[in-house]
Length: 81
Image (cartoon, rainbow, N blue to C red; front, side):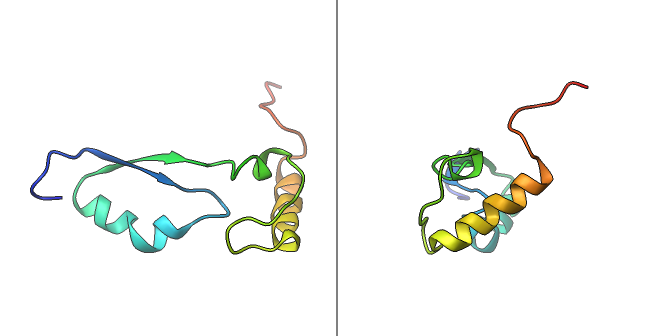
């Protein structure tokens, strides 16, 4: 990184894929490099798509995350009230 002019890196990052937290964020921060997150909705699983296996998560684990999100934000979209 010190030999390049890199200013940002695009990587997959979501509630179901938090690997960048473990492997990359500190390195990028220490080199003042930004992150462009992709896949933040985990193939739609975090936005209302029916449960299915994702990465190392079984269907039940994905459903549990979906239920947790539904409890926090019961309907999609932004409320302006």
